[in-house]
Image (cartoon, rainbow, N blue to C red; front, side, top):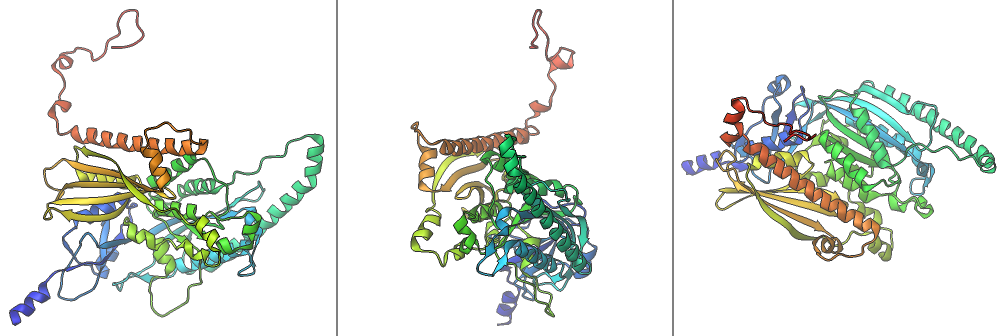
Length: 523
C-alpha cells in the first residue's frame, strides 16, 4: 500500500494553464512564444520564486502552473493553454468622434460621446490597478505608456493628439483623466463651431459655384493607421496595442488597403482591440442609418489577437488582487485560438429583441470546409510555424499521431469576416530529429457560395465586387505559396555544399557576367 501511495504521489499531471512573464529588454513576438511552447512540450515545468522573477532577465519565465498540486509534477501537453503577461506596455487609444456619436442611446439615455469618456475612464482605472497572476502571489504592476488620439471627421485647429507618451499609473490616473476630459470638451466645442461656420457658408459656396473643402480622412483603417504611427513614438521594447473606442459606425475602405494595413499590424507585433459604445443594434440611431459594423470589429480583433468589449463597467475596489476584465482582455497575450475566443464578446446577444426575420438576415451563413491544396515542404516544421505565426496565423490545435512519432499542428488565418484559411502542418516528432520534411494541407472554411466560386473551373460573369474578392483570394494563395518556396530555398542553402562553393572558373578570375559587343544587356 505504501508503494502504491508513493507512485500516485509522484505521478505527473497535465497542466491546464501556464502563466508566463515576458522580459523587459525587448518585445517578445508571437513566434518566440510559440517556439517556447514546443520546446517545453511533454516536459515538466515549475514556477520560479517571486525573487527570481523580479530579478530575471530571461525572455520568458514561468510564473504559475495550474492546477497547483503539491508533490506532483505538471507537464505541458497539447491542450495546455498559455497566457503571457508583459512587464511594460505601450497603448494608443484612438477615439472615434464621427457624427454618429452625437446620437442618443435610448437604452441608457446618454449621448454616445459622453459614454466614450466613461468607457475610457473605466478602462484606464482598471488597467493601472495592481494584480496577481492566477496561481501566484507575485503582485504585478506593469508600466503603461499611453497615447490618446481623437479622430475627427472634419479639420479643426485644436490638436487631436490629446496625450502623448504619458506613463500612467495608479497615482496619476485621476490627474490624467481630468486633463483628458477638459481637452475632449474643448475639441467638441471646436467641432461644433467649425460645423456652424460651414453651415453658414454652404449657401454662398453653392451660389458662387465654389466646391466645398474636403473633410478630413475618415474611416476605421485611417484610425488604425494613425495608431500604428503613434506606436512608433513609444518605447519599442514594450508590448504594443491599439485600442479603438467607437460605436462601430464608420466608412469602409478598399479591401486591398485593409489587408495591407492588417498585415502591417501583425508585422509590428501589435494587437488591435475595440471598445464599443452604445447599445449596438438596439440603438435608436439604427433607424437613421447608423448601423454598427460589429462583425468587422470582431474580425479585426480576432485577426490580430485583440479583444472586443461591448461593456466597460467600473472596477470595484476589493481587498484581493485578482485580475479584472481589463487585465485579462488587454494585458494577457497568447497565440492559441481558444483563448482568443474568450476575448470576443458574443454579438448574438445584441439580437435578443429583434424579430425572427431580422435575425435571419443578420446571422452569418453556415460554414463549410473544403481541402484546397496539399503539398510537401523540404524544411523543418519549426521554421514553417515560425513564418506562419509572424504572418498572423493562430494555433487552433495540436495532436500527436502514429504512437507519438508524428505531430500535427493546425493553424488558422482569419482572412475575411466569414472566411478562414486552415493550414495543417505534419512532421516527425520531436523537432530535433533529422527529418527535413513537412506535409502541409491547406483548407478553406467559408460560406457555400464562396467555396463554389474558388473551386469552379468555369468562367462566370460575376459582379465587380465579387470578382475583387476572388482575385484577392487568389493573390493570398499565391503569396502563401511564394513564401513557402522562399523558405525552402533559404533553408536548403546551408545543407547543399555546392551552394556555398565558388566555381573553379570564377575562382581563377573568369567574370560571372560579360557585356557582348553592340549590346546593352549583360549575359
